[in-house]
Length: 204
Image (cartoon, rainbow, N blue to C red):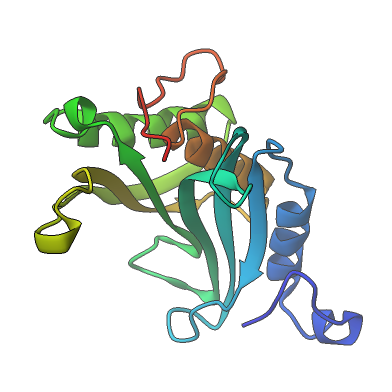
C-alpha cells in the first residue's frame, strides 16, 4: 500500500511498474468541477494499492450555507500485484464506484442501468484507455420518507460499481476517463463527442 504523495525514499522501494502507474495518475487532468482527494486504500486486495475519492460540485448552484451543490461522488482504486492475478488476467486492476441522484422519471426507467454501463465503456474508448476483463453492476436506490419526514421528496440514486484490467502501467487515460464519467453522472455538459450522458440529474 502506498500514496500518491509518498516520500521519495519509500518510492524507491516500490515496484517500478507501480511507480510508473502512480506517475500516470499524477499526470491525469480533469474538469474544474471535480475535486480529487487521496483516501486510505484497501489493504487486503493487493500488495500495492492507491485510492482516490471524487466529488463533483456545481459552482452555480449553492446550498443555504453558500457551499456548491454536490452532484455526484465516486471512488477510484488502483490495485497492483507484481505476481499477477488469474482473476484480473494482469498485474493491475482498477476498481471504481460512482453515485448520483436522478429525477424520478429517469430513475424509474428500466434502461438507466444499461445507460450507466454504456457510459463507462464509451468513456474508456474516447480516452483510448486500453483494458480487458471489464465487469460491473448498476443499482438504483429508492429512498422514501415517512412520519415527521414525510414532506421530503422521494429520491432515486444510481450507483455503478465497475472494475477492469488496464493493459499496462500507464494509468493516465484510465483516471481521466473515470473523472469524465463522474461528470457525466452529475449531468454536466458538454461531454466528449460520441458519449451519451445520463440525462436530467437531480441537483439538490
